[in-house]
Length: 497
Image (tube, rainbow, N blue to C red):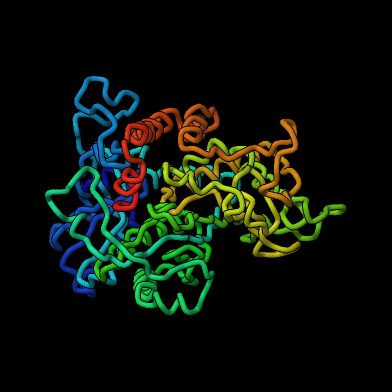
């Protein structure tokens, strides 16, 4: 019996997908396939199989050491896997046992920068054929199932800022005498000097690396709309058209990994860390555009048929439907406990500063880029949506989107109402009773809010909350013990994310 059969994937649809996959492999003259899996930090891990064994693994899967699911952001195992209760509460883990990566044959892609190499996406299963619940993609799938039960699907558009540098010297990073855990990044120089937003001259200056990004994204079939030079030195932005949430999350994982690889081959270093370790930079955000698709009418559930009587531009239902307002209010209500899943690195919390086109308080605004939630769309607008500006580009997209779904669902269930839109997202507080609720402005505060949240326990489960908090506590402890915080940022994030 094939492992896929043990997992319950033995229907005609799965078999047809495998046959179509095998046909592509032969047509493309592939000689190796990367079996890739997204870890809890949003990083891809891979095993490369030669052709004959890769074809077998479409049904049998590939073994992977389970400790890859228990590592913090430095690749240190955060659980004592070889002690009797070292993985207590983590059923199925311990002693460095194996899990199995089973590929989705529909996800096969040929890598544009390595044409004889194919890539296929996997999910983790225990060896008895049960799904590994800590697999972050599976967490999003469960959230989407809950949303579907309400009659909705989530659509997401991605707007991703990141930095590209020209590698000036990689010798330090690759010198065996200076190797460390984690290691240093390369010495780099800018691809454009910045501080001239959307400058055509700067765009032309970085035409080569931007062309590599374009060729890579389009070669993988990703719905890239535009590439732009952002405000900061060497900062750029990629914008993608909206898709259903699971596809959008998959696209984000693949885009980050692929762009880094393709650019590295050409002598560039791309980083999706929020704040690169240099004096003059602008923080990068990941702005997540979201709307609900009504599964009965196949229309945007956030769209109003007409302006609500008496509603003004600062009212949510001026342009959003009742469903849209409830969803918006849910995002606001659970923002503090969701922050860690939207901004999961210590580095990312330097972004929450006033007047920086990044949010500071838990507010919404109408087409207001200083607010955490930006409502976009005029009354009776089929493109009405909510843009969450809380996320950083290093976030695990499956967890980021799952946090939005659960918060929005709670807003729908409780029929929460949104306050009036802010007109001063960085305004001074007027007193304790009138203070806008602040976004947790440190990693430690965000971690505490997540770990202590009854809501997160209910939605994600106590086991996951403990698991994720343990990994992030390890990251925080190492940062607090670091003699040089800047070196920590270089080694932990710049060299790896």
